[in-house]
Image (cartoon, rainbow, N blue to C red):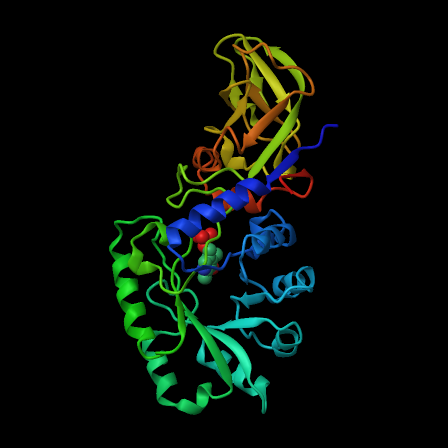
Amino acid sequence: MTESRLTLDLDALSANYAALRKRAGGVELAPAVKADGYGLGAPVIADRLWAEGARTFYVARLSEGVALRQALSDRDATICVLDGATPGSGDTLEGAKLTPVLNSLPQIEAWNAQARSGRLRAALHVDTGMNRLGLRPEEVKVLVGATDRLKRLDLDLVISHLACADTPSHPLNALQLERFQETTALLPNVRRSLSNSAGLFLDEAYRFDQARPGVSLYGGGPEGVPHPEIRAVATVEAPILQVRVVPRGESVGYGAGWTAPDTTRVAIVAAGYADGVLRSTHPNGQVWFDGARRRLLGRVSMDLIAIEITDCDAARPGAMVELFGRNLPIDDAAAAAGTSAYELLTRIAPRARTVVIGG
Ligand SMILES: *Cc1c(COP(=O)(O)O)cnc(C)c1O
């Protein structure tokens, strides 16, 4: 077989959940499983995290919420949809018992109207400085001033999102914390949630009632570099197809992107764009093979990459090369390609054959 392979380590997922719980000091962890569980498969991820005690999950899109509700149909999970009550989504949200995270005054109106004479569960997103989704603090004042605006809503939770939590010294963290405290004081009986993965590594003041970790559950360090408490969950490997010797002065790959300064042993590996390898892996990309990091040579092709193996005897057709995972931390592989663990995870291509361990 020459398919690339994604090994999903569910025991590592559980270990990361436990590590983050410890960080959270007893507050609820509500995993972010948007983008199909950061590319790893939302149903299998949510199933395992449910077994670990998670009862609330965050998705981005309505369609993701519907799919997760189906996957967890026998369980009473709270599924929060970050896009909120978008136009035309009301009946689907209500039908699948999804909780929209309302992020504008028009969305609040729409969800109130959807409730008709009954009551519907909702969460509220307030913006404290990221300027992405959410009501501005002054809009929250308008909202609480007009009591009928919320009267049909079972408002369970108010959230905000940190723009710079992966940089603990950034002054915007403290500013967002202060705005969140001020704004949520207007909603005294509503539970509060501010932190993503990285927020859990700031101080206790950021914890509130619930945290919403994503990337660190899946193996990404909270500051974009490997963290000793976080284990690799996804390992992506691909097999060597052939080993060849490139004479000095000859080049490798499209665009003759790399020229051999000396006679060089090269392994051609069955991984390319269609397996999630990014073009930006040139010129600094690395893989792990036979106990060491090895350089990528030249540009990635649709289905192939070349790696340097001059001082390595183990390279032979069929031997597996690790693109990132257990031995090459995803944050290091991402940094070498000028990107983030988020992008590497969500780009793992469907062509990879998935093997689940610890299931
Ligand atoms: C994606 C997301 C999270 C999870 O963030 P990580 O950095 O992956 O931990 C939490 N909250 C919101 C609103 C998000 O969009």
